[in-house]
Length: 457
Image (cartoon, rainbow, N blue to C red; front, top):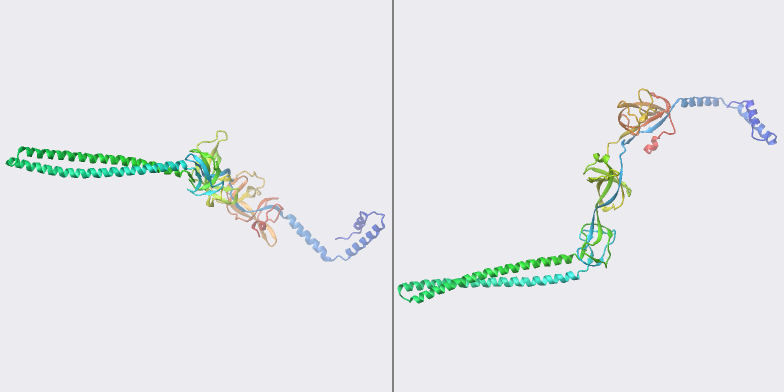
């Protein structure tokens, strides 16, 4: 500090205290005395410190102010995201197949079912009676078939007996003819023997015909028996319909009726959803159809489970678009391990394949031959696939910049991919107060990112 009596006089004169106050005079003269005393005892080192501070301040003022950012990997293309709602992979209606009163229903909405699980009972009194009648008729037909088989057996015995009689009668007739030729018997006896042989032959043929008749009776009885067996099986099947059985494994979505109601064939009892997989239908613009195909893998996120990303498969693309909005329904199926995903959840679908992430920087950070690039159109594409980026260097307490040649990739929305030349977490200059050159001293603006905060150090 440089002592100046005039300045001290002005300080006293401009004091906010009232000039006429005695307190003002005492305090003012005491302050003057202290200040003057201190001025007389100011050491030489203070002046040197002041000179040094002025030198440092001058150096800081000569450094170029810059906005610095941290290089990060990112996906340059912002992919469209479609929203839809989760639904069961399939929904099945459990319906009554018979007429009767619903006696019981032992499940409720939300209950998880296994395939063929019994969930309810319909009154089967009439069906049980019909089954008993059918089984009684079946028993009678079985007896009829047994009797017919016995008749066939008897007829075959008769055939065998008459066959033996024919053989005996033929033998007797031949013997009588021989005796007649020898003159040992009368002609009448020989004729009687031939008549007996003919009679026995006719009886044999009648017995054979009886066998065929009895066999036909057996076949008819067996046909009636088979038909009755089918009726019994049908009656048993119809009676089994009295037990309401879940056709699939799933969860109960809705109870359509309650115990006590009279059911007709076809009446709906329950709606069951299959949640082994989950289906999402999204409305896609017709302009995006060229990039979507059946069997394609897609990414699905659910707001209900924000920490999980699911991989779904496009299973169907509707052949018809909405006439007004020109949107096409696309169906995606995603796995549901553990059956955690329910129905009606908001789903976000991204059809884009996961691309390789690269370092992405603003176009304003790319330096051209003319120097700083901050004034260029942020949406204009660089003329060359190469450029320069200034990175920050800190050495011996000094902050400077060094240029790096980088290979450029795609551009989008004022940003450009860096294929090579700039590594993640490197500090680079986004904007500067004036054109930079190699080794220039810089100072970071308040808008600059801090590497420690980014890396978590």
